[in-house]
Structures are given as C-alpha cells and as structure tokens.
Length: 386
Image 1 (cartoon, rainbow, N blue to C red):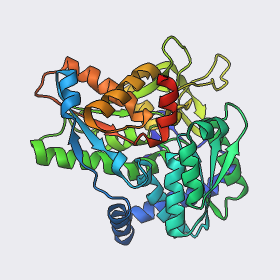
Image 2 (cartoon, rainbow, N blue to C red; image 1 turned 45 degrees about the vertical axis):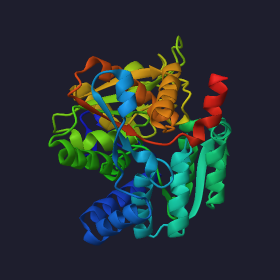
Image 3 (cartoon, rainbow, N blue to C red; image 1 turned 90 degrees about the vertical axis):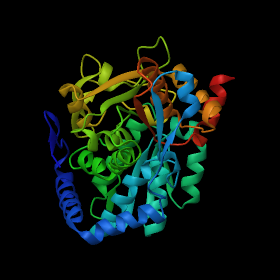
Image 4 (cartoon, rainbow, N blue to C red; image 1 turned 30 degrees about the vertical axis):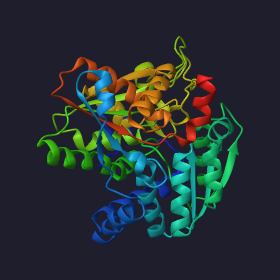
C-alpha cells in the first residue's frame, strides 16, 4: 500500500510522532502477512460484527426513480450500526499486537466513537474519545452509548467544536502519550500510514459488493455510490473497484441550499495540508482552514483522504455535492419506501443515486453503500422537518 497517491498523502507531523507512525506501519504490514492475524480479524468480523453484510434491492426506491435498479450495501447492519466497526476492529487488534494499553479516538457523528468504545471493551483497553461540543449536542444518543460501553468522552471546546477540532485534540493527546497510546483514527485521512491502513480494513465493503454482484448478476455493478466526509466508507467501496469497469461516484456535503459554506473539499477546495496529509482542503485565500457546515456531523470536515484526491484528479472517480435539504428528502424516501432509517451521511448518497438512476436505463444496476443507520440522527431530522 502506498505512502502517497500521486502528489497526495505523506506525513507532515512533529518529529515526536515519526517513531510512532513507523512502528504502526511496521506492525500493520507484518499483520497483513500474518495468517493468524487475518484469521482472527475475519472471525471477529463474522461473530462479533455480523459480516458479511447483504446487498438489498431497493425495489420501491427504484420505482420512485423510474430508471436503473438501486441496491443497498447494508453496512448499517454491522454491529454498532455503521461501517466504522471494520476499521476499529482492525486497528484494535493492531494496538493489542503492539502492546498499547490505551486507545484514543476522535468522532464527529459518534459512530466511530461507538465502534472504538465497543472494541475497547471487547479487547480490554482503556478508551477515551474526543468529540466537539456541537457534535455532542446533535448526537447525544451516541455519547450515551460510548459512556455505557466504558469509554470516557472528552468534550472539545475549541474552534468550531466539530470533527476537525476533535482530531486536533486527539493528535495532541497522542503526541503526549505516544508510548502507551494508540490513536485509532477513524477515517482515511491523516499522516501515512493511516489513509492506506484504513482503506485496507474498510476494503471488505467493496470486496463483498464485487463477490455478491458476480454471484447474483455475473458481473460487477455499473455504478458504486458512497458519501464522502473524510472518506473511509467511500474508499472502502472504491478501492477494490479501481481496476474494474465500475463507475465511482463520491457524494460530499453541500451544506444548506444557497450557502457557500458546506463541507465539500473535493468540489470546492484546493490542495493543502490538514492533519498531517496533503490533499484537497477547504481554506481561505491565506491558507487558513475554512469553517464548514453540514446537517450531517460525519461529513462536517474541511479535508478529505488523499486517495480520493488522487482518484478525482485521475478522472477515475467523480465527486459531487448534495445539499442538506436533498439529503433530508432522501432520508424520507428510504424510510417511507423501504422501511429503513439511514444515517444522514449516506442519505446524501441515496439522493445522488436516485438522480443517477433516473438518467440510466433499467438494465443498469447502482450500488449505494448505506454506511450507517439513522437512530443517531432522529432528533436532528425531527428539528429540521418541524
């Protein structure tokens, strides 16, 4: 797995973190070659996580669109309710392998924090999760879940008090406690080896899609769609499909309609450095990181993983932005048509998939990665539609 993706990636970090990143890379590469590690990862993913997750034909949503078939990759059915489990399990097993007794993590929507807390409990780690105060307020159910699972939730009161600020605080903690602590970074961002390692653990999503698609249809889907904040569920979907015929569509958060804020780094940003990695970043003319805005806490981030930046520039994947109002519309569609409450993050991708389906012939098939369930967002949705 590469250190860079074309011009993007790298490790722009203080010297104190270089040995920890090198140790992590060595441990990860050794684990990838270790049959015992791979067996335990697969078995825990099956028995604890509930993998593999199914492809579900969204029949009534397809009828609403009136074009290509829409299928859902049901990552919302993984233990904890989101794809975040895949990466948390892999990194948790690595931390145990490295002999680190403490886990720290950042979280925006709370799903990564919940996944880290679950793994911390299952593997016996002391666990602390950094979360911005704004996100703690709009994702209160997940705060309670983390605390019930034994994790300490550390409120972040600096900056916008959202995901970017939570990552800042987690990095500060890691610099201070690097010998005893593993930073279980939740998305495909940050310094190397995190983007490649997270993509590796999340690629189970795309591999399962391709395997079941070939079993069902004898060929891969025509289009794969996934929401993109930092980009972990999307890169887990896209990475195994890079050398296939599948079209790739990433969907960012456009923020409220009429707003120029949003959180769409790939469609509105430009290359820069954020959290130790060179990628597309939302920034002002002087290079200061711009404020972001999205109804979905998990997409409310000013940067994006470097592999997505590479796929964008190479023309291998397309990236678009969907507004809050359209994500809410798609939330209602999936709830009323399919009996599924999606998280607000993949609701952006559902909306884009319906738009794409309307343009395409009925013989084509679109797979949307339903990265999480919507329990955590019920208060937000309720306030938005009141």
